[in-house]
Amino acid sequence: MAKLNTKYIGLLFISPWLIGFLSFQLYPLVASFAYSFTDYSVLRSAKFVMFDNYIRMFMIDKDFLHSLKVTFSYALMAVPGKLIFALIVALLLNIKIKGMSFYRTLFYLPSILGGSVALSALWRLMFMKDGIVNNMLKGVGIPTPDWLGDPHIALFTISSLEVWQFGSSMVLFLAALKQIPQELYEAAKVDGASWGSGFFKITIPLITPIIFFNLIMQTLHALQAFTSAFVITGGGPLKSTYLVGMKLYNEGFNNFKMGYASAISWVLFAIILLITLLIFKSSDAWVHYNDKEEGAR
Image (cartoon, rainbow, N blue to C red; front, side, top):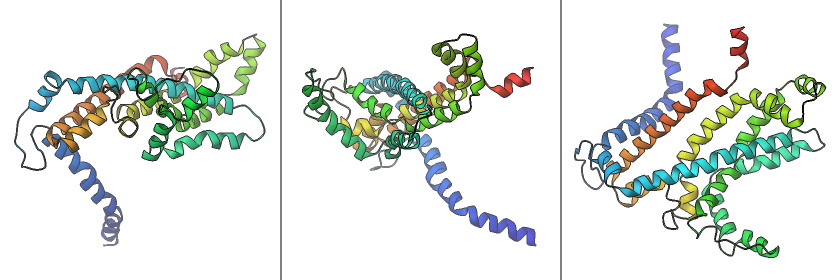
């Protein structure tokens, strides 16, 4: 009897999470998959159209393929830039100098702010034609580009906001650098190894698990980006920053094509899943785990 009561008490305690999961995660997930095969528009009942949404996406709707291309370009700029910048800052913050805790907090601040609407609005003010960045460039006599109005550099401007939020990756890199035994560097110095040799032959191989984790997380984040492009450029100019997230939003909430928007979301999910699996598959060739090496001995 006491065991039965304990079971019901346990269910009672997890019921808020269970209700939230069923209502706001599992049901929308299943419903969106079902709606992806309909022409559901919210204003009228859904009509089953089989694979028409998916066929239209790849055979008729050029905007979708364009948004896919823009999203890949965005991820290729944002993810490597963010990881490289985070690693460089982590290396600098790993140096033992006075007041380092302050500098670590300072560099982490952009990530605390997150990808909010307010931050995106601030980025737009900074990079507009007569914004702070161009005023600074004018001050030192450097030509001032139209960061948000030129279709050739607008996507770079948007991706720079993603790179600027490098704090979480930087913290993980810093933790990994702290775990590297200093004896390895001292032994390398005795053998005459340069700083660069120590970096590429000791540091990089030993932090590959963290590089792998950051690569996965940041790729997932970049492929689902929406807020920055929506607030800063609205997808322009000439749709040069028209990400898949914006395409999905426009179809669902501006054109009321919820069925088509659901199909886009599932294709995006499949693409992200495929890229994640490819990265996992490639990890056998470049990620080094100490426990695996010890187990192989």
